[in-house]
Length: 240
Image: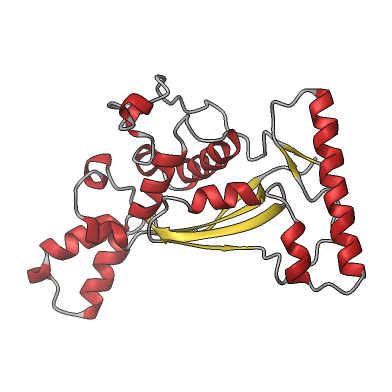
């Protein structure tokens, strides 16, 4: 079984907001580049307080960026993550340039199927894959053959953006109204932020219903989001 995996490739969710905030306040104390670099080095490795991170200083937080790599998610999940995302950049594996004829277990199976339903699903995926291989072997190029591939095709995805953009997407996609795959991917990302960057950063990415009310109004699921106590960096789905 191939698991969905998430890794933070790079980030500056550290003391950057603290450095930038002090930069705006201590111009009279900076008389050289060395002074500026000292201010940076004295603050960038510190953990900013939750109070500082909650301030409405968007310019400071737009300088805080995060790049995440995700392995093993479905094409459907890629599309759903992109929907409603603002100012995030997405790059994923491409059916136009990639050739999947020799890939083993290339499709994601959603959870919640009965054994009988799962067998029907697997057979459908295999039939599609066989047709894809046949077209490719008969000279159809990767781009045209790729039109056959379903939303369950397993992909890799890299997402990059500033913290406000991540904060918005995660708060939307951690909501219980999302598909379980998308919610789980965001839980993995949140877990990595909490582990590598600190609770103050992660807490700001939680859905609004955790600390207030659901903005979906009458479309609300009626249940507050509860973050899993333990999130393993693996999927709740499996592959054909």
